[in-house]
Image 1 (spheres, rainbow over the protein chains, first blue to last red):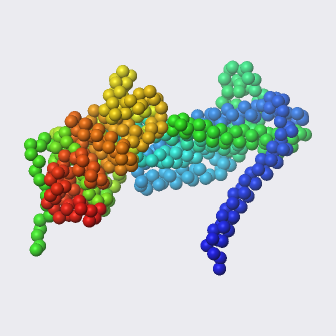
Image 2 (cartoon, rainbow over the protein chains, first blue to last red):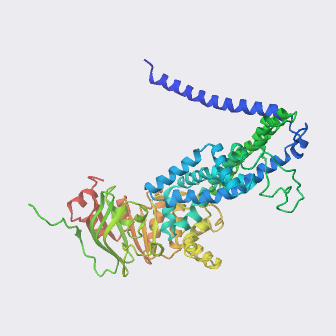
Image 3 (cartoon, helix red, strand yellow):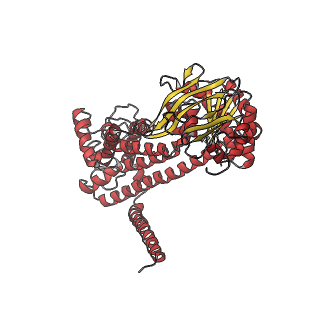
Length: 295
Length: 267
């Protein structure tokens, strides 16, 4: 028979083992992607237009599209997600209606992104007639990201102890005043972290965008100030292939001779940006937390 | 002997009182739990009344009736009357937000907001719509002085309230409540998380504040009740067992259970 002490040691070992496996996979993956891609990343790769059949194309427009789509998506997602989260955490009564709504959010959050993409194509691209466009893509990604934002906001608010709510209420604050002046500022570090992490997910999303934002991008002119010109970077009605869609496209439908290198370089850039999101989420969150505590 | 009469609490009439609250047949329930049972008593103005009794006797629940904090507990409901000025506090139509501006509260654990000291003090005023900087500045100085915290914080009003010590945090919470110039102060074991020196300081402040306002304090600490309270009410299992002047209640309790509790036979 094993002694309790041995079982304890065994379990500790297993736990350390699984943590190591996870870290190992991550490091291995990152290592391969960065090693294969890093040699292809150069200033001209980042700042030149992509090519459709010759070698030597860059990813300037795809990188821009990814960021622009992300910003638009967050503009839609953050207010809705925040209000939804506040509703669930602070206002919703614990009844069947609330649990129904909660199941809806959970279900929406777990929908495969390809399905959300099909839905976006039907609704925004076809029914609304917006075609493959940044707007269609951003709204589709909003559907994809909003439930996550709601869950993040709700969790951030719920993590604030009740004595804060009681303290504020006892001073004659209404529920909304408490939310606005006590709870949201207190939850801000967690909200921001959640927002940046979900931004990483949006930034790397491809399946939902293939049918909504398209597989091509016009060559953008960054001095084009007419918003609705086809080559305006800010035109929300133009097609916009993003970085991750580009990776998919050059690998599957692309005919450029250096597809493998472009894909590797683009992958490395994508991974680096997402890594940057995650790191900044942690650093900024910690910085604000320290600011609040006043040490 | 069988009797249909409910056991009556021993309530010693307090002479010439000007009651702030008149509680009549108050019952409070949490779902199926009957937390406060048939309590009737009056709270005299500008005095400190202590609510004592063993854990779970309903004294905190009773305290939270006066500013309707029990509203925040979804399952809680109350019957009976709590008359304050010309209103029944239990009336669902009553403006709770306005009520809580007149009846301040201090909690067991200091609960400053994670904001600056200044913002903590003006929270109630800002929620009440006060915007003028001069008014807010003045209120901050006056209420921090009332809470004896001004000298320690005047140079760091913009610093986070969480950088204060526990005792300072509780005095900040007191200042925060005082900024609204309340008529009544409710305290729910306000010193149970504090060291003896901070406790003494809070007690000193309460004795000063009772000149201007009515204070009701829930306490586990019988010495504290004996030190600062003018009147004391003893609760047991949701019932008011005995109520009277503190000295009389501590020296010559009329009810057997009070005697047992005060002598430490249970608690």
